[in-house]
Amino acid sequence: MLLLSIILLLLISFADGTGTITLDSLLITQVQDTSAPKENSNAYIVTSMISRQGFFVDAGSSNDISRQLISIYQQQVQSASKPPQFVFITHGHPDHTGSIALIQQLYPSTPIYLISQQAIKEAIQWIDFYCRNNIYSTSQCAVDYTKVLRTLTSPRTQLIFDHPSVRLNAISNFIKGESSYAGLLSLTTSSKNYLLFTGDSITIRSHMFISNFFDTEKLPSSDDALCAWAGSMQESVCTVKLGGRKPIILPGHGTISTDISYANDVAMNIAWLRSVRRLTFNSCNATLVWAEMVRQYPDFAEASLGAKGALNTHVPADANSVNCNCVNGLPTICPVYHEPPSCLHLDRSDSETTLACDMQ
Image 1 (spheres, helix red, strand yellow):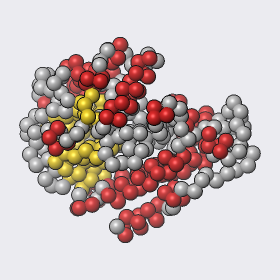
Image 2 (cartoon, helix red, strand yellow; image 1 turned 135 degrees about the vertical axis):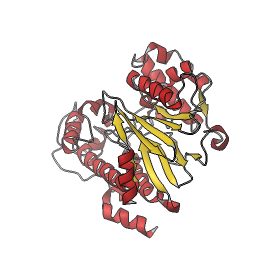
Image 3 (cartoon, rainbow, N blue to C red; image 1 turned 45 degrees about the vertical axis):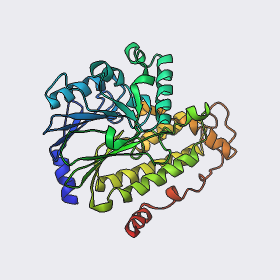
Image 4 (cartoon, rainbow, N blue to C red; image 1 turned 180 degrees about the vertical axis):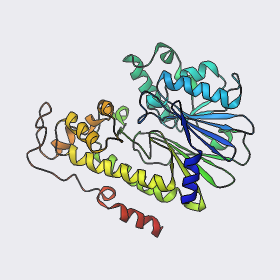
């Protein structure tokens, strides 16, 4: 398995903000926002070197990603008119739906799927929010998303991809984490390479956006969600290797991982969550919390993302829950230190997680 990891790293090339894997006559390209290289890798192109057909997973957020997505796809399929066979949107956050308008304009016949009607509803609510606040462009807001976005009801018949011996599957039974309603897409080849496009459900770098805002129209206290999310990430380390599969994890944010590097990525995510909880339960000041997280994890959290990090779901709610009595961001550090509430998944060590996988 270590040899596979080395070979995979050799096959990944980075140029002009993209990374491409060549595997079983497939090209899998991770399109990155060159203006935020640590944060936005939230769009993928998969094309067959045999049939010259392809599809997209997620659609990024910026005009930069939109231009790259279409340009690279057209080069790979060797056609400016051949439409993608489908687009799969992992979840409804607007940094994953930004190119839908351009895709619809250029390829109106291409179906665009989300895992459920609830995921579509959340996507439209976020798009409306972005349009009302002039974050999306006029062209992005001119689309009737109620007609464009489709529910994935039968992956076997809807996710059509012309490439020999490839099996596609959509996974919906995943715990609420970074988004309220999310789906994962898996692609298995005849040689048992197992590609898992996770969106933001598993590996996430730089923010902890627990998004069930539109369920209640108010920001939730989400510490229980963080705990459960940590557990689902730990469990995924065990399950991706089942059945002799050779897993490759393609996250919505961060770098592509093999099973070896993925275990390390998840361990880093868990450490990040442990650290941020210790801070949010002991500070009333989100600016201080985020600055400290950037200091501790300089390659994991970008300074500009504090406002996007949903810290307002934790600060000052977490500190107030332990009677810190926050007022207008003060005290920056609570006078008495409080351990965060017990969480099995965050309290146990990484070695205990590894042992649990081995026992399975």
